[in-house]
Length: 300
Length: 284
Image 1 (cartoon, rainbow over the protein chains, first blue to last red):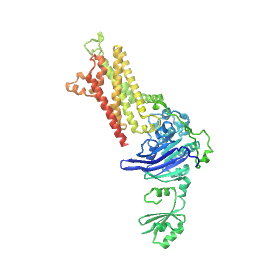
Image 2 (spheres, rainbow over the protein chains, first blue to last red):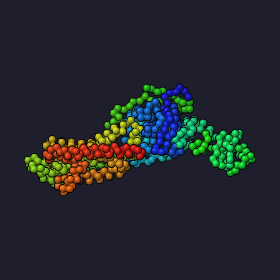
Image 3 (cartoon, chains in turn red, orange):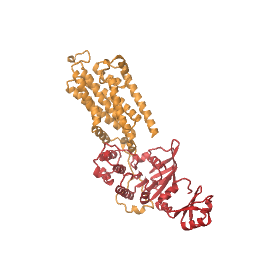
Image 4 (cartoon, rainbow over the protein chains, first blue to last red):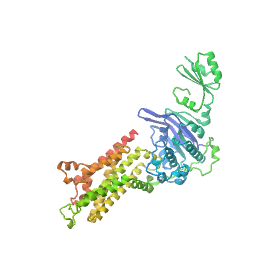
């Protein structure tokens, strides 16, 4: 990391509750300009609430968030940050071009409408009523709207929902090209392969907190090795974790889960020297890492 | 303030491939909270191509004037004969119908603010520099402009059908009717919109307006109603504003009860708007 510039996002101790439900409990996150960050987590993890706070759509109960050193609202007023949200509604009776003309008129400086139409791949449907556009086309329109202000930070909440494979590829190519120009991108996604393929950094969120945060390669290192599960009554976690090649142990009742770089040796040990039975060996992928990190009762 | 973008180690490689100009971080805030004529123009265009809006706001008042008002063009409204420059019942109906158009436009505008909020458009707009109050203001102006068109269209048809009023009467009835209908019924529309979010708001309000217009004496003079109806009518929201708008016509002079009626209903709808808006926000 080079000289610290003003971070694109600087969130400290963000807290937000809805009634008795604590949606976000203490999120600290700093994103440097130019980073592409994937925000991963199951439904209800607090991703959308966190994004809403970054955009000033929801006031935090506690903590603070700055976008390029400004309050979210001030950053939006300057067109420094824009977003494609799941919930953003569109006016069905406007045409695609009118929607963009209207949005463009609200900013002090914008890119030409023709350019963002082209970038989002919707030039051919510019005169179509929004209500007649498919879900994927509407999603591209939202993307075009977000591009108008040429934002320094682009926040995307499940941006490719409803897009077909071709649309998804075109979308990510556009995002990638933007990042090359220095645009910071933070996107929430369900698609782990998208995070893996397009992000420089992955932030995993669960139950309102960040459970893992690292370069995509680091997160992928968690993926190497195998998982060995066995039924082992009265298992001693510290004894198991002391075994060679075991990186991580978790015990839930009689069931133990071990992360290892040598599953053969571990299985042999368990079957020979312990009462372990029902042994199950699986290779890891991002999905399983994700599940392990974000499910309950997992040691870090 | 200029902030240089410093690439992180991670994507420094990609940065070298950069082609187009860098993303600039030195930005301006638009003036007037994002108020633009483009938005106003698009709002007007939306109204003008919405057939239902045109039907209820422009065509219906003109049509009703022809059906109800035109046959009464020779019936004097006051003791002054029409030949002596007195207003006809047709003029009375014309003012009423013009107000109806302005009311319809205002109510639909108010309701649409709430409907668009329920549909998430307001949330989309919050990603732009547009101030939410400026958004409501732009829509109110567009609604009032369409209301003005409705008033002008009805008056034009009235004038062509031979209704004769003094310049002061044309202007004062039109202006008072237009402004009062806009103020009271934009807030009514907002209130109902926040109370009944979604597409239903428009239907509910349209129906309510027709009923209120009837009992408030827009289609049928309150003075011709049975006594108990007259008493009820005096407490309904259309009554006050229509009495005030038609005062220059009847020569009845300033009516404190009518003004009180108009102000109280305006206050009721305004408070209702604030209360339901807050409740709506809490739910979201």
